[in-house]
Amino acid sequence: MRALTLIKYSELLIKAGRQDELNSLNLWTGDDNNMHGGSIAFDLDHVVVNSKSETCDLWEEIRSDDMFWNKFTMRRALLVGAKFASKMGDKTRAKTYLTAASSLADQLNAHWNGT
Image (cartoon, rainbow, N blue to C red; front, top):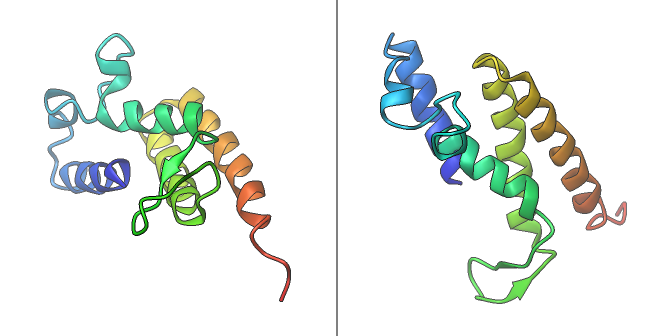
């Protein structure tokens, strides 16, 4: 959810002609040596690596590796993040995020039985 929020904020900065602030605020640096590319890339890269790990349910505080809401939110963040990474010129991350989002879509489809 943080990546989604920071992407939205970054898009507002870009729209206002303040794209240079993305680096100074460490939102998206384009530099893997600087906190792995900024906060947005750091969060999305974490999702890519840990999307099959246990998470905690928002309401019940139950841990599981198959929380629908969490996987749904991760997938959305990866899709939005892929578009943003592409806009920022990082085609490699964009492709990585799309691949991970596809994997999450497969996991989410397991929750649907067609009725």
